[in-house]
Image 1 (cartoon, one colour):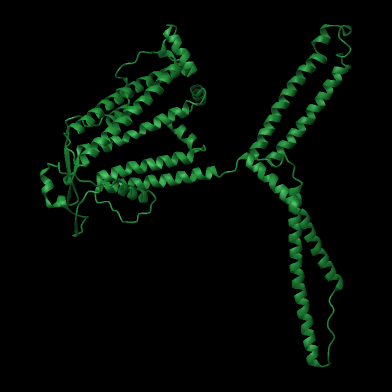
Image 2 (tube, rainbow, N blue to C red; image 1 turned 90 degrees about the horizontal axis):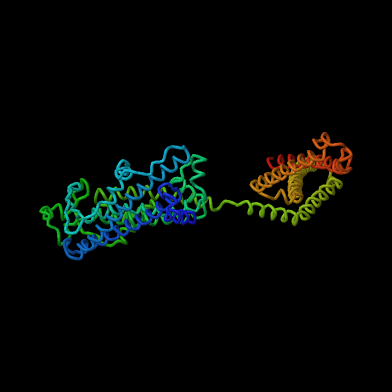
Length: 508
């Protein structure tokens, strides 16, 4: 903005043609996009107001409705003019960028028919230009299976006008891209277009991803609800309908598909019922208490289910990104794990020693069989079986104790290893890479300084061009500075070896 203000002041002084300034053209382009989006959204609000007057039973040719239609026409024309100006500025900005990056000749004069060569401009012209002027109205009757449904022109134009909400995205995109310094230079260097795709990825990979997806979700809920309400509403129920087929039996009593059962068609004008249907559809629940009775209503329901599935997937991805550990959190948790290990190390050591002492005491005591009560072959068989059973049982118990002791020993070694971890090792991979990079840059600066010092104080051009007597004793090959240079070389080699060791440790 400061650069644009400076360019504007120079342009006022006659020192610069604003058509050749990239910053000033970019600033004007952003301003015209904001004004065009504001005018388009205001026109959409007037169109919705006119349609609601007609739905509530007001004559479409009444004074109130014609006044609202006039306001809608004025704002729509203003929006079209601003969008046309936006495309002219966009073409001029692209020419300036091509002139800077590819050194092509810059032609600041643009034909007034240049925007009509763009397919995007023609599509926007069709979306933004659809409206009903004052004193104009019509009715459109269609057959829905065996049923007759009538739509008002105000309703159809309002449904088309709701597509203008895409202008909000342009405002958000420009506000995000304006925060990026030198984005045109970076775009030309990396050959990446700083447009809607990159802005969408930036939002999804930021902390504001979840609010952004939630705002899109609820915004689409209201838009789809309005579409569903308009699709399920027949103008034959209005007292201002003049179509000759509204008196038919098929316009009042409807049937679904091939079913012979009929029901009386009534318009549900409550927006909250449409919101409920769209909400349960976008969540892929579908209770079945509200059903779509028209083809257009079913198409809206299908679109709602698809958009809801996409929003759930994006929300899940954004939520998983929010739950990821940061580098600082990873370092903090590793330090906490080390302190926990130090706290319980003595307990595990005592448990391992008790297990070892119990086993040693049992092995030292050995097995002492009980004395026989009476002699006889029955008692001898019983005692033999008891000895064999006790030996098997002792072996099984000893095996369990060995496994438990090995488990205690393994746990003790693991905790002991955690206790001896250095504080530098309790850092995430990103922090380690940053530290290695910083050390590398520091050693590079040291090597450059060492090279400059050795050139000056070593056997350089000073020694060759001048006599040894004119050089101070400190700077001679055997002097103090020469010794310091050798020490610096040894320190540099030691630092390089330590850097290599730390790098391999971090990679491992």
